[in-house]
Image (cartoon, helix red, strand yellow):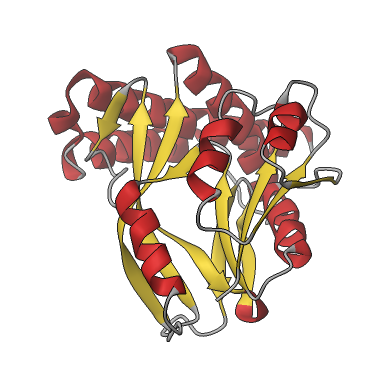
Length: 251
């Protein structure tokens, strides 16, 4: 089993070293597909001896499909720059490489670190992600910016032990910056799909998001971080559908 590790990047100097360190002992090649970063991302990648290539960014799904296409080996492990493999997950993948894989894809739980705290509730864990796939039957889909990896036969999947460690936000400012970025992309995607918004719908969506995150998904067990996640997730919902409403007003 030959394995390609693939990552897309743009200005990821804060995260990319940790990601590459977790991959270097298990991947037969590491491909970083960069969108012309303006920080030290390329310099850091060069120190790890990876294949560093660049391609204009056309969307998260499009960029990840391009990276998947460029991978050399039949098996591909796809990570975001702010993710890393836990020791248990590395061991599970190494054990898989020593045998003949019997499935088309392998999923794993993603554990997120939010401003220094690991989040075990709030709808953030277990955040099951399909990331290890047989290339010939795999593709990225979903709705930007929320990409999702698929295989042709979803019955041919198996779950691995260990966690995919996700270092999401370091500060409150990081979170709000990402909310603004993702909300603008999501609103445009919804608009393109002819989905409409209204004030009653916005109110309903915001309340539902908060209830889901804080109460239904037990966010209160994550303490203050759980409260912040619930309120900011509700705000993200508000912003997305408000921007969508404005798009229709301007149309």
